[in-house]
Image 1 (cartoon, helix red, strand yellow):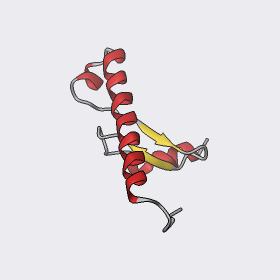
Image 2 (cartoon, one colour; image 1 turned 45 degrees about the horizontal axis):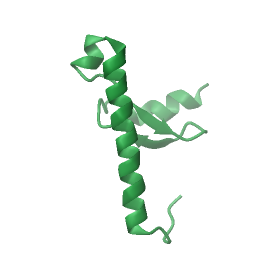
Image 3 (tube, one colour; image 1 turned 90 degrees about the vertical axis):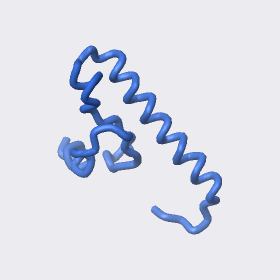
Image 4 (cartoon, helix red, strand yellow; image 1 turned 135 degrees about the horizontal axis):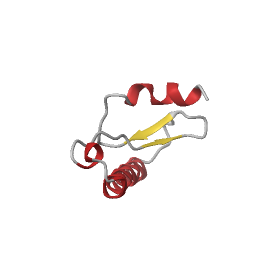
Length: 76
């Protein structure tokens, strides 16, 4: 939900923090998986979702399936 009371500086700090969390998530998957697909093709998609499975933030990796991630999770 959008709010007109959000401080732009706080917004950018939170946005960059979420970006960094997803960067670290993706880097951890690459280091630990041992899969050439994850290590070299970067075919992975770390993401942060709400408790309801709604999109909050996606990482900078494979974006092809990003649009349907919340749809897949809401089916459970």
